[in-house]
Length: 63
Image 1 (spheres, one colour):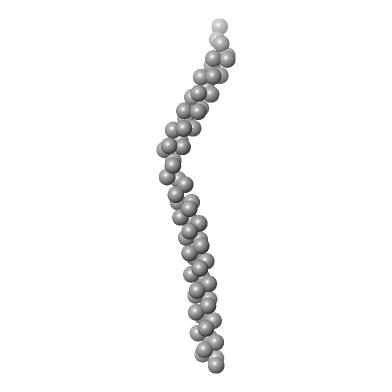
Image 2 (cartoon, helix red, strand yellow; image 1 turned 135 degrees about the vertical axis):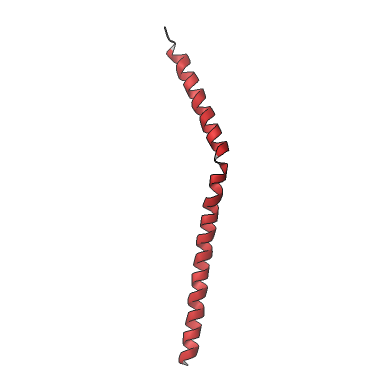
């Protein structure tokens, strides 16, 4: 007869090993997320700079 407690413990250990291997294999996946946030911030700053330059160019042209 099967001992369900032992089977469950082996399954839990197997799942823990799989999760650990997945974390080690995909550690690099966190880096692009930080870069995406940085690029979003850089894009926002660039947009503000372009709008400010356009505002000053138009205000100087009209005066």
